[in-house]
Image (tube, rainbow, N blue to C red; front, side):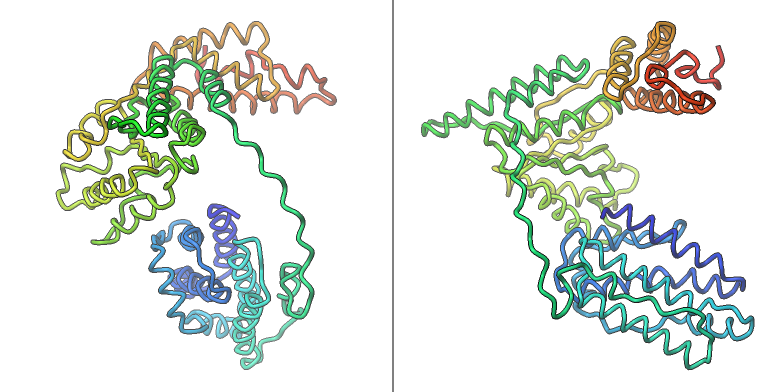
Length: 463
């Protein structure tokens, strides 16, 4: 389960309950306390299994309702919260729910017990397992709230939610664990030739492709010289990617990470993508911890920092971006044999960024420039999306697209999105085609595949 999925389910469930509260004051009290209360519940659940991972930080930071403050806990802080968990304590607003039900005859308090139980089970299942220990903890908490309802003589019109039915098979007390299937054979990792073929398939970027291949040749020869015990000239594999959005910077970085792994330069070959928010925290000392966590996650692969120029700020001298840069530079030195850092962003701003710190200048001396796609290249990308997804342009639509993409390139401004614009236009065309075909009773296969001028033309644009 991903952190965005946890956030979506949590936000929808808690927000739906909040809308049921008719008393404005009680609704405000609930909104003020709910997120913190549920986060404490998550800490209690995770402490039952005693196996926190850095990914639990992402789940914790996903527990908030839309419009509420977004948490930014760090791994060490979350571990401390689990270690210091004081035990379950009912929220202050719950007593208010009970009094509200006694006045109005509603059943919000008991309904909240169900909502609370489901949310804790959601947190327990983030690792795809609800253990007996986690279920027992959820039961204890739910029972404490239920007893408060019973003590207030609130009526109950349905059975209490059975938490036991959510326990993952094989994790029940006193039962034999389910047989473990033999792990599937790992997929064969692509070789250098396959990865280079994927690079060549990318539209445009001819200069970048040549630069990548030259860099790979240098790295391969360097490894061969090491193997033969020959002196190895210094070689920095850290890179600066300069160009506008949508020009393929992340795609090339991901391929480069895999290629470095294939030739033995990196031990894993994964790409970890971050921006300023993934490195910089809001308090003194936390930025270094957050940046080190990103570096640890990227070890053996490539740390890709998008819009890296946001780390330097001339307007706010006390900004923590400089702390992130210093921590990054130290990490690059400490792990120089198994970490590659790629910084990316707009051409002019990246040039200013590199020259803002002498340490950056010395470590980043290779620049790859990603040019904007031409009109013909934009059209080629659009055609490729059509082919991969089972669509075909009719002749009139093809002519219209060629002219439209040529005009898009010629009239581009600071909002020009290159490949991102093409993907957006493709998705819009597919949506318009779906609206058009919905009026047909039984569209044929050819009709399902065909994109017409009506589909690719934006009605709002006119013409």
